Image 1 (cartoon, helix red, strand yellow):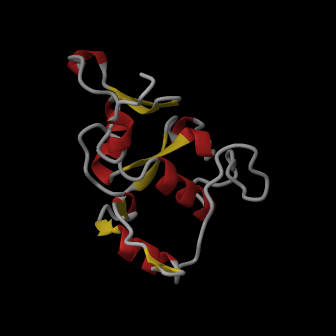
Image 2 (image 1 turned 45 degrees about the vertical axis):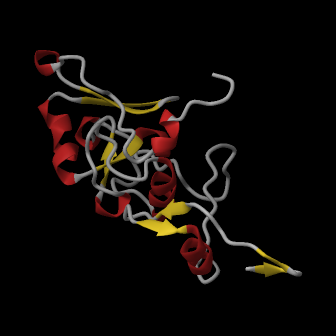
Amino acid sequence: MNWGNRTVRPRGSGVTGGGSLLPMADVIRMASHAHHYLAVFDKHTNQALYLGRTKRLASVGQRIVLHARDRGCTKPGCTVPGYGAQVHHTNGWAKNGQTNIDEVVFACGGDNRLAEEGWTVTVGPDGVQWIPPPAIDVGQARLNYLHHPERLLVTPDG
């Protein structure tokens, strides 16, 4: 890119919804031709992100927010990117679950079915937690940082 007489070389990389790592120059070039979506997590009013029991399947708007929030399967250790994930109701649809953005998460097909095996999935301030049934709980990780490596960085103030 060239601003005035200065040439700027973008540094860094971006991650696609499919989990591919791209050089920042490619991300900027592709973004200039893309349809843009703004992910707003509070005080949203225009997009129906809370569907309750009216629909079982997530809306396009909900999937866009899940791509921004979860980025991929939320089960710890799972590498499936958002494009390969299903939308999982934290309280199963058959158990009166709601299709609300704060009650759905990304999960791959195999992990989505774990809920029927006694796993509990919750959405909290630290992210999506997967809690195993007591019989197999050995203190394993509850959060998947694979799709959010920036959460592992140490900040200057802490």
